[in-house]
Length: 100
Image 1 (cartoon, rainbow, N blue to C red):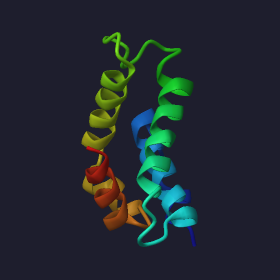
Image 2 (image 1 turned 90 degrees about the horizontal axis):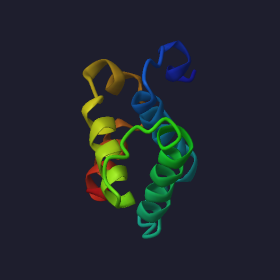
Image 3 (image 1 turned 30 degrees about the horizontal axis):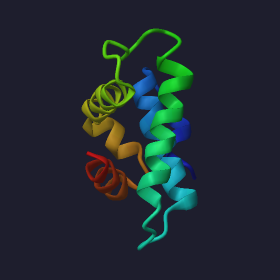
Image 4 (image 1 turned 180 degrees about the vertical axis):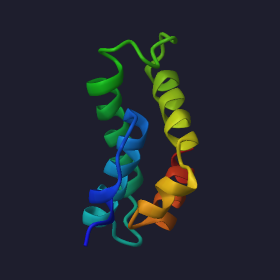
C-alpha cells in the first residue's frame, strides 16, 4: 500500500518532496553516480514549471540562487509528519543533503 495516498499535500514544496520520494522509489540504484544530477534536473524542472511562472523564488537574476532558495524551502518543510509518509525517508534525506 502506498503511504502517500492518505497524506494531504498542502504546499508545492511538500509536493516536491513527495515527487522526489516517488522518483527515488523508481530510479534509485546504489552507486549510480548520475542520480544526483538527475535529481538536480528534477528540481530545476519543478522550479521552472511551478514556481517561476508564479514569481516565487525569483528574487535573484541567477537561476541557481532561485533554485537553491526553493530547495531550502522544500527542505524546511520536512516535518516529522511528512517524513513518516515517505517510503524512502533515509534516501530522500541523504540525496537532498548531497545536492547542497
